[in-house]
Length: 313
Length: 173
Image 1 (tube, each protein chain N blue to C red):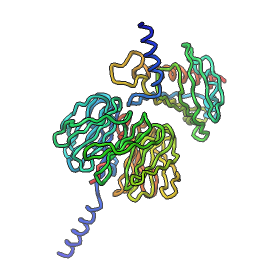
Image 2 (cartoon, chains in turn cyan, red; image 1 turned 30 degrees about the horizontal axis):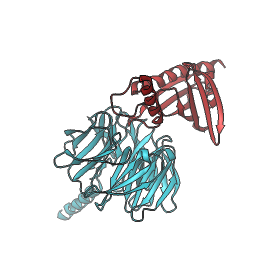
Image 3 (cartoon, helix red, strand yellow; image 1 turned 120 degrees about the vertical axis):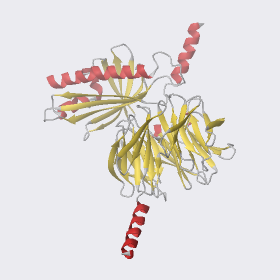
Image 4 (tube, each protein chain N blue to C red; image 1 turned 90 degrees about the horizontal axis):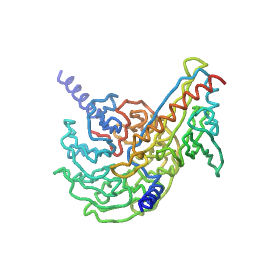
């Protein structure tokens, strides 16, 4: 009897260890909401009203917050991760688009597309504590895992800029393709999409050597897997995802998804890839290792989710 | 003096014509046509002949520029628009194009027209979708005629006139 219970316990523990609950936070520009989606259950748990024209998203597990940039009403919404309730709306001037967390999650960086500034939000006080003028039309941003750099794509000057996270001092500016937008980092590789060149740039952040790879029509977002074997790019005007083999730096496959895929995020743990689809008001779920389309989940209107939008337990 | 300031302002604006606001706009319209998909697709994919079914376009001239196929449309309202063919997908019966420049009050306009099978062999559904931005890229106040509403209205009018025109042509031909 005791043995039987023990077996059951083992079974239960191993089961719960495998069953994480990845949740996607999807910004819906057309309905001014965020959809909270249980990816495995294929269900929208909640749809929460935020500011106008929500675009970007950043999740801080450490601080238990979700930050949403609202481009059309100059604000950042702060959502509590436990209760999924809005705890603050931070008024910022200008047009917040890109949003990302610092490596230590003490700060949230927000790019102001029109005024070409980066705001720093303190995640303790939830106030703007710093503004720095950067290149023209900053959009995508990401921090490295070591806590050293912040990378910014400047859409209207075709550059990526690098700043030190510690004191926001300028490090370097690198030429990329035409209209850089979404960015991603994994290990030593920084990925940048060039919207009007239909390409991505891959920059080695040690040597700063850059490679350019052709993808589909109007790419917006990019991610890569845990070991940098494959990169995945949303082609907004082709309704698909390009799969790039990072050994040969060539596109090897296109995976059909919903209409106008913009945001893309990866969940290595659950072997999933998610795109948010602006035209079809949905997210598409892809099997990461099989590189196959799995299913679609309806969200709010004009889903964008610019940034890292999956919360992984 | 006022004229000079206005023209300087206009020159400045024209330089920024490819930059845009952060929120794309969408117009999506469909129509059911009592004609076979093949017949409808033959009309849709003829990139240089949109004036045959779009009442708001009075003339269309196609030219090749290197590898690009461009058409210059004359609008009923008087202005001209240059559009670029981005692709013809025979299998999907989908034509993709974009506006290069012109008199329609939009920025970064990308569009496709797709023909789908209807409920019987002699029926088709045509869907026309546009994704674009308003003309004015800066913060509010947004000048009249350069806002989201103006952009959406202009595209909606074109689709609302064109799809019935396409239906009429396909069903009578």
